[in-house]
Image 1: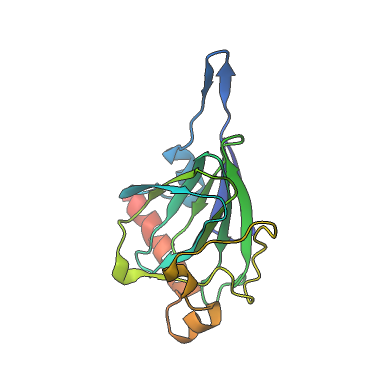
Image 2 (image 1 turned 135 degrees about the vertical axis):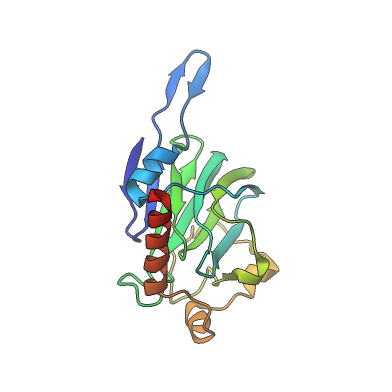
Length: 203
């Protein structure tokens, strides 16, 4: 498995090595030990989600309050999506930066999104099926969103496909509005929480 750190710190792109023959193929799409090597702790699996989207559906930018927030391990098992990670941690050297990678049923890469980061994806095909492992269960009272079309973020979504947003995502605040409302986690709190997870893993 090849692991590359994103330009957004604490996010990673993981590409498995497929083994194929005339019957089909086999691959390891998740290895807790490889993730533990780069993060210093394993992913505590609390929930697994599956999302099926039509072409042009844009989901996110989603995040959750820290602690505990919600780390995600995301892959696309059918079709293709443009997956985006956004650094929304106040005080981070890369605050406001984003990185994008195509997840599809060809390369079968995955993205690991650490706690405190924002996450979104854009369906590039009909029936785009995304599955993701989560470190915490969904907690509506702790969840919040950033508008994915916020000009300040300037995410380069596909120009040839009209985005389709849910009413909730379409009414989400901009990054600046979220900061003003006190919704965003701080970089300091996130780093402290990462250290707590590493310490718990060693105990």
